[in-house]
Image (cartoon, rainbow, N blue to C red; front, side, top):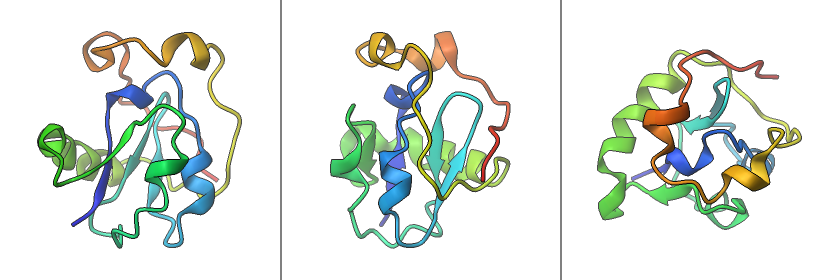
Length: 112
């Protein structure tokens, strides 16, 4: 079992979750984060840290498609282990729905 990041993270990229992860399994894209499900130890400490509820256990009914998504991009993007400021406009973007189709970028972030 693992946790996954869903599209609520897109264009927000709060990194509170990264700061508490004991195994450094977060990876940074240009405008969102993902979790490597093979590295995640299912401790759950990241989930309550996300201010926009963008992290779900992979057993959640809405998490099915996100497991492969997180795996794919965690293999392409750089690791992030330290907290950074959220993206500009994160507060305005946090309640927008269906962000995957409208705003997702496959480009990698900076990482650490």
